[in-house]
Image 1 (cartoon, rainbow, N blue to C red):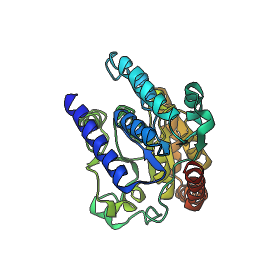
Image 2 (tube, helix red, strand yellow):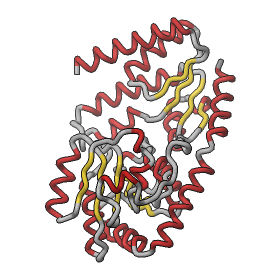
Image 3 (spheres, one colour):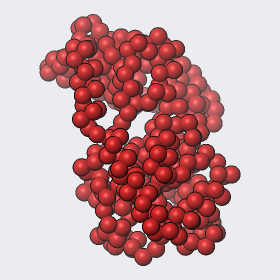
Image 4 (tube, helix red, strand yellow):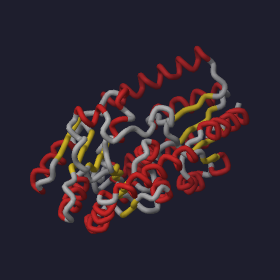
Length: 329
């Protein structure tokens, strides 16, 4: 922990030095660890330099929800410290941009709701575009000749990686010989591997791929899967629910139905169910029926892309940011 604190302190000093050299007006800050955020907020407040907080995650809420379950109960004390830091820095921000309406309740408690503008995240439509199912990457990985469920991205404290394998097992039990593809690195890898061996699920387990392969990876999945734990629903919007529709593939989400991203999946004709074992039969049946109907599979993929083009128009997001920055400067 001491090493982490030192890196945070050094990084904060580097960031402050950069701001002093470049003298931006205002400063837009996002995804900054709370200790760095507090240091930067304090310095900019003293310099009378306007700051816009782009609030991607409410870190205090995340830690508080996981304390006592996936984290030690001692983290509940850390959550209080983080909340103080986030609240203090929010009160000294000239404006706050949040990615979901759900964050408004937190800022209402902190007395900063009047500064909030909601601008949902988006996906780069020019970099993630629909590709052929049997593209070069799929052929290279041997994924061009069988139905696939694909998950690409992080698997951490906000996920139950065994649900991926159990979902594939549910589909296979219904008669569709689906393969599970997981693109991931980290502690979830041995968990997924062991579960696949135990449940006899064909598994292709790959490390994170080069950015140049970004469009081909999701295109290689017939159905793309999103995971998000129930307790994470208030403070996390999975980025996969943005990139997956852009790829033009149907999405199956095992995630809190009240999460902002869940409505996006449903609007594109996807499937949403809570991230619990009891949801797997219904989720497996949806996937099985879709994999047996190529025309419907293609239709939902096209609808996903159309929704992405509608929701992720960069011009609209840029106009909103310019308005917020102009008012804050």
